[in-house]
Structures are given as C-alpha cells and as structure tokens.
Amino acid sequence: MKNQHTLHLQRKYGERGTNGTITFKGKQICHTIELPWRNNMQRMSCIPTGRYKLVKRTYTKHGEQIGIPNVLGREAILIHAANDASRELLGCIAPVTKLTGEGTGTESRKALSELKALVYGLWDMGGEVYLVIK
Image 1: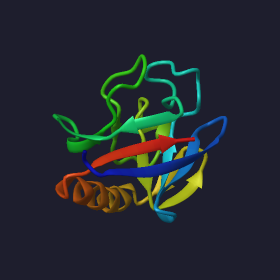
Image 2 (image 1 turned 180 degrees about the vertical axis):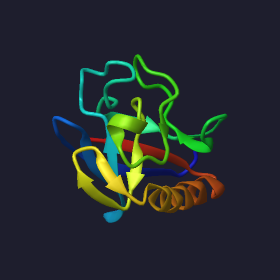
Image 3 (image 1 turned 120 degrees about the vertical axis):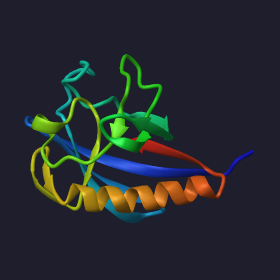
C-alpha cells in the first residue's frame, strides 16, 4: 500500500468569493481563493467539501498542473494560478500568498510553485496525495 499524505483546506465562505488556507501536518502552505459556494453549479461555484485524491494533469492552457478528478458533476478541476476568482476561475482552486479580499489575493504563481514543490515531492516518493476540504 502506498503512503497516503493529506493536505487540509479550511475554507471561509463569502458572498463574492471563498477564501481558505492549505496546511500539511499542521504547517501553513498557502492561502487559496475560489468562487463562492453556489450549489456546485458548473463554472459558477467552488467544488463541494470532501476528500479528493490529487493527480498530475497536463492541460493546453495551464501546462502540467495538480488535478482534482472525481468531483461530482464537475470536470477538469485544477489547482492553478489566479489572483481574482471571479475573473480567472471557473470552479478551480488558486493558491495565493496573501489574501486581499473575498476571492482575491496576490502572488499566486509563487504560492502555486511552493504547493507544487510539496505535492510533486510527495508523488516522487511514491505517495498518494489527498486534499480534504472543509
């Protein structure tokens, strides 16, 4: 059986966006921005809470990214760079270095790079990586 590693995303829901913080073994990795919760409507809502296995995906627009498959009623959910959820996200999760408002933040590429280094490192050691959203 492969080693299982779990990242935790603790969310705070707002009218204009969903903000959160990803931790691993109690240590903060980055903040996150997402669309507001709108009953899991495709391209308009953040994804439901739950436990998701993360996988490596390659997409034309974003290149190699961390994918979140098996989201009920959704497809092509990724963790990718964005600083404004309402303008740049369609249901995906964007890591940010600093939160600046509901669904907005700064230095997303830097935060994504740090998150990818952690997740890819765990994959390289032969582990499975999960994201628990609550």
